[in-house]
Image 1: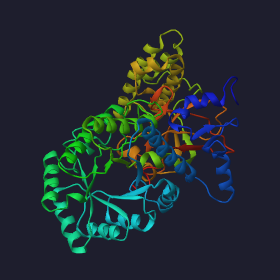
Image 2: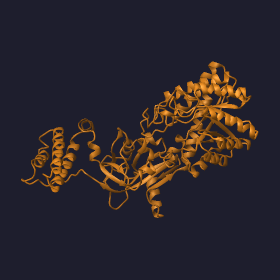
Image 3: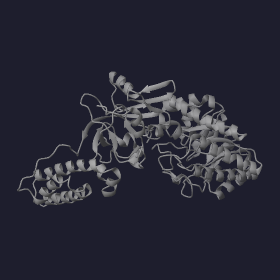
Image 4: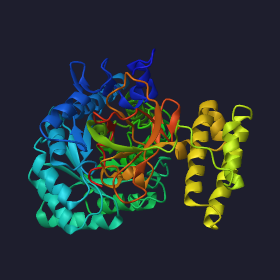
Length: 542
């Protein structure tokens, strides 16, 4: 039943929907979660799942909302266009999607289709990806950026694409690549479009911090970059150097780091122009983050900036440095993959069953011949109203350990150990009702996690959410229905694989990152459906 006063708006605050949802998800008056493509197009996720079930399609389900891709691309382009107009910036903005972020054909196809009017390009980091980009990107104004490791066959394919009329930039990440590019270009008879990746000193301070700084495996040091420019000049090919590129890491949480990187990269541009390199494009790489935990902060799972602030930071920093040095501003390329595709995919899982440790039911009283520790545990329970809950918790923890030790030594029966567990968890249930979150975290931080219900869901963490397991990435999780009812349980999600790591127990909530998720009692007559959100980037292809 719906408790008096509980509204779906309270659920939105509890689960941080307005934070991580970014306007792409909301809760309707029915208490169901909606996917929001725009003001006129809303899809009730519960009704959608019901319709799919009627056609024989049941969870786990991966839902894609293509209109969100279009909306994200337009938003990014609009924010850069606004920044360029307000700054009086002479260069243009070009978006480029790195297909490694989500290589699904449907996703790449839609990005190419939606991006045609915006001259959105593609980034390839391998030969198979380059084949795909050359085949799919038909817009002659769209840019193809070639990053990553490059052998002679990769470079030859890129140059053939250039010869066929595509705008293919080959970005030099290692010194030996430049010799290959020049050699193959002479053999084919084409003037290459060359970019140089700068290995900046600035780092991202996020999960992917090693993408920048001295630890980065890609990019040219200042010395290597200077040698590359001189080599091109000596070969009479300096006119082919059209682009500078940097990348300090995916999901950059702090705008301060972005500004520092832009200032450093802008001076690389200044020095390259002074050496005679006709640089026309500054490729700022990826890094535009997603607010996974809804906090709008500098945590590794969030960002402390808006999309407009990100665009302003890049455009204005480049503008100011160029004005100081009397140089023309280059066109700007950004390789925003995560920010484009994260929102558009949702994983729907069904809670198959619940394992609960805590209980409101009073256990039976131990017999007079039971071990002393078991009888004292019972006395702790019956005296709970007379002793402070903090003291009762300490006593219960100690006595339970003693009983487990007795069992291991053969001095307590299985029935006695089972009764001790029942008494202990009933006692914990009562104590948790008397203590607030801060008191529990001070006495026994792991208590809430240990006491949480286990919601067994039909999915695999390793297959569907590899980053949650591998690096501790936060993903929003919440019920997609019954949101006009106050949740009465605290749980974690466990998958149905045989691996004990197959669980989710970090959840972004209003109060911060929680080890447990507020959930509802499962009704026997209906499915209890949960959604995992912002999974469109990297999760499928990993």
